[in-house]
Amino acid sequence: MPSSARSRRTRRCRRRRRRQRWS
Image (cartoon, rainbow, N blue to C red):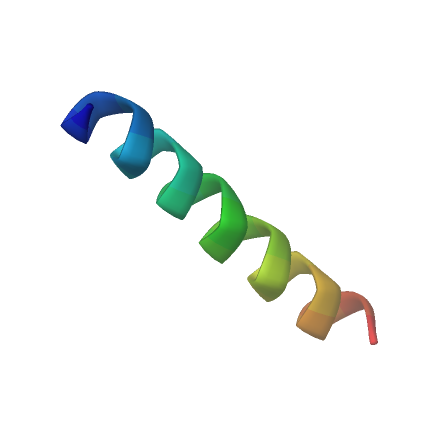
């Protein structure tokens, strides 16, 4: 359970940062 949640959180954080840089 913790492994999946951690992976999901990292992916979301990375995507948000990439979107801001592109914007």
